[in-house]
Image (cartoon, rainbow, N blue to C red; front, side, top):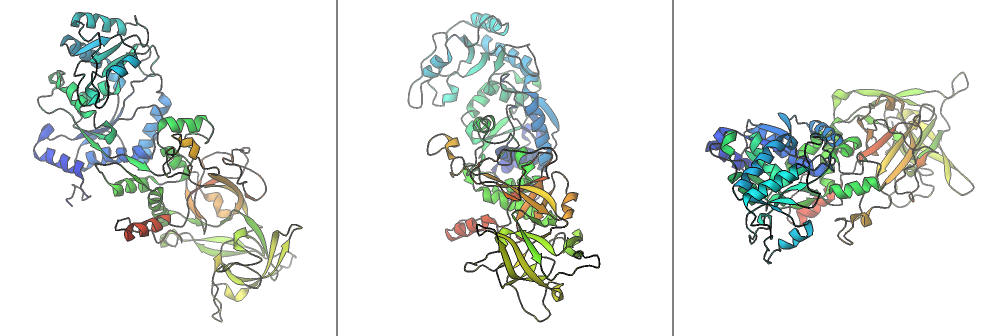
Length: 607
């Protein structure tokens, strides 16, 4: 594999850019752009395009613009513009310039008149249904519009009347006159302008005709001096139209003496059990299936950010999957493996208990004042990073442990706490269960243990071994917290494949809210910071959202969204970013057995 200028692996796009530099195409310039429409929030699929556009420009000493293709006044807003700018910067990229297609409306209008005067565009009075029917289909001939032969002066007059607001929406459009029998459906007299009596968030009420994406996109590239227009594969058939428009416009007026912008397509990023369609995402939000565009169950970048995904992990994931010419889907577990590897190396450790069960040490010493003694245990902040140092964790005779860490009757291969068994408390002592208290229903409410003070260093002087280490929180020092545990938002690998409606495949219990406790050091965690709750997973401190309240424990499984939220004085909320188990490892093993390849499993994520 050849190398790009910074030593990264090459792909067909970088090969093309290198060849263009070598042949002095575009006078040795390299310029790309990321061109979102500001009609929604960016999602994980956009991350690949952002990374590609910006890194290609950077690797080859070029420039990359962020351009908003804002040609639809009814769906776009400053809210989305601001969010997109913020998300691009959060992902780690700074645009050389921020541009807007709406700034080019005057030039696009002048060029439309130029095509009309050249006999290459005409006003069509047919409605949308008639135009669609007339285009025919694959293997079916198109039918020319009865208005296709209008003389240029009449077309020019009608177009100017459209621009002046003298015609109703849907009554007329401007179409390019290309070829109604072309094998590429995009070339069958595409629509260039449609009438919209709507206020535009930037141009106001100046216009009542708006360009289509295809008419604005390539021309915006030309105006900005883009050399390499990188698009996903769904725009492959649009390339011929992209080139046709540029071939028939007076680009010399912009200083073009030779090469025009060149469009190249690459495979988009898609994940299984995930929906990135803006239309479906909007249904999820507006239908109350999720809490908003930043709900951590969504694939939007701000949702991933709120959930605690490091931007560096997303960039590394995009680099790993590479740039291909054919679409494919990736398992979300692969993305999570990059997140887990990053957090394993950087996230501080803290102890928290999400399903608390009281553990009483019956032989714990009592002080002179008649109260149990409290001491502090030293614990590592991150065993993967010695420079992270240690912290002091309070320890007392009454602790909280996880309900799952005790069984009255232990099943086979269960090595945690059960009557008569000894386990190690993380950074603490060996304890042995001597009794358990149950309620009238037989549910365990309290576990009684004795501790061995000689095991303070985590080992027994007589060399005896234990098979399990469990975490804990001192009940006298516990800080209330709440934690959101997430499953996939969709049950199906390909949501909507079964019924054509992805919402039919929604997971009925995709979020569970737990009321738990944590060690006092949890108070030092900043909003947006990720910590590892030892043995439980990586959790991100929420910015400011109120959380659920109630007795210690987790939400009912029957409530799919757990949308009941509390007051502003509720305990801090933590979102589980990823669990400790590397689920990608099992997928990797299956791929290797079948002759495929995969990223090496993260072996440190569970520490």
